[in-house]
Image: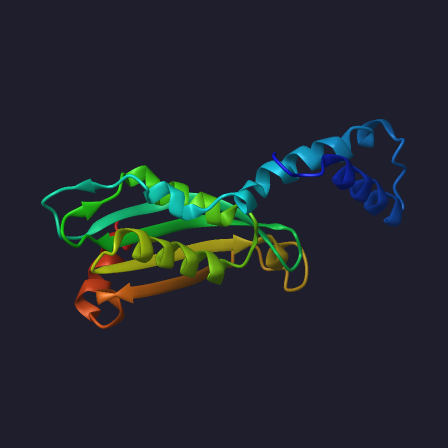
Length: 189
């Protein structure tokens, strides 16, 4: 919660509640501004993080084939409407020269990038680019599927609609066989 102005968020929440016609002195709303400010500090904690930090420690293993962590749950906040979107990510890479990261680091990178006002497309690219920069693998392939509350609760109002984004870097940009290998594993239950 470093450098988050909780009081300023509380005041803003009060103003929003008043602007929509709510009584901010109503019992159920008395502590809402404080709860929202703490929630925002947690949900936007990625603004103060650098996802590259999770790859400062790497290991060397005699492995230069697919590494895939799939179905990594995540949530983020749409920067256009400040409502959540959530889903799962699949992160694959092929190590080069045996340079591998701890598996949890892929999920931590995703979480760091997602915990800020965000676009799904940017999360996908940033995760892939971070892994390429820090591990220098033969390739990275990131697929994210998410449901956006801005499409569910307002506007189009289509609950259950999923948005899928993918980014291919390195060998995955040209090699359909390698890309299809990842896709086939992602589709497995």
